[in-house]
Image (tube, rainbow, N blue to C red):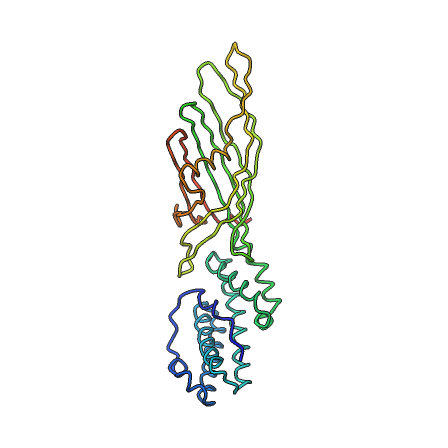
Length: 321
């Protein structure tokens, strides 16, 4: 007897299943008896049918767990009887998994990021099991795969002000990075452009002009970590490239001629500030802060030594067009 794929599925969310009546209390050895094994499979089938009809994520998970427990016990005992009954239960479990994928994807489209990510986990698990993939439905999984990226899309917004105190230099930059969820890895990646909002240098008797070359800010790896209730517990941005903006400044202090000079660009400054703080990885975000619709998490970065930095980062769901 084949062992089921559903071990991973059972970690998707907590739930409190109803009592299993006879099936839950049957010692595995008793399942050697056809009548008892048949009764356990019949109860599993009833639970799966009811869960499919209900369209409830938690009931589907509970029914799949019930199926998984009985089938695993039979497999451990190398039980060879009741092939037709086992097939019926297995086919119902495939339908339940298909329904679970649909329910979690709909929940994602309604705003549940956790459901969408767990649906992605299930898709990855199915990719590793050809028989179960065929049972759940290749076309159905393909449709789920096509829908998930849209509901899981995020944006990283960065608002960064930096002041070099001794030089009286101030700069303000903004970044917006559209993030795509990779169904193969469960991680986010994306690229956006750094935009200059303001630059100034306060030096008596002098004026400064700037040239700014836009550069991409690339996120190579951003991970959302979930808690047991499918809520976001933390965000970890541990692989990124802020780019090199190529800022140049021309300082004019009459009667001296204009003095072209390269100035520290924002991308280098941003990276240097992280190294100074001793941690390039940006984690320990505030979840759901500020309490504004669409905001997943926020992070504030600051220091006040030679460089005075005030950088706010927001992870948000993009507005639907």
